Length: 67
Image (cartoon, rainbow, N blue to C red; front, top):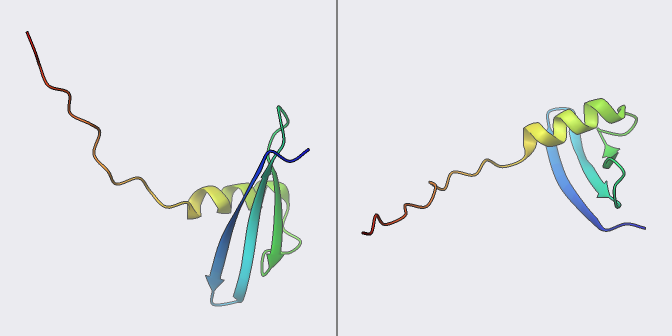
């Protein structure tokens, strides 16, 4: 049973592609490549997916010092 799935679109000099991350329960995520990413092993898809995720540039919240 699939709990969630996330897709990243890739645009490179070699062409277009997609990497889909499929999460299902306690099992490790499964990655699927399409387009230029088709045929890549799971390790390469996971590394590319992690590298392409946008960074969180928001600063951590500042808590007021009371008391």
